[in-house]
Length: 175
Image (cartoon, rainbow, N blue to C red):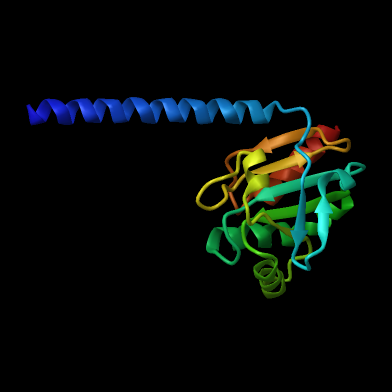
């Protein structure tokens, strides 16, 4: 009898996991086709407020990452730093977002000489709008066109290649 209960429990757990994965997959598909990026206001490393819609005349990269000064997040930030001239040449404003506070962002920026803005989403409210919410924020990015339309969604970021991937996608979209 115990074997039957264990089997039923296993089958119901498998079914629930599949249902959750299907829902998550559908949410990601919806976000890929979203016309307008949700507006938000967050504080940066200097406690200065930034509102996404204030940058509506230019391209914006919003990249979510789990945590300051961790291996993957450092690699991604440094690759963006090393390719930052390319972002500037293309008039792309770069915003990194994690749930770390402004003081943590300031240390991270100073330690790695990051030339772009890091925003604090300590309540994870913006992460929720952009399907980046989790125990730590998910590593996903959005390239937003002037006017606020999402041009490209990156659900599977490779920290080592992400910066060059964004620039190549931008150039392809402009041609």
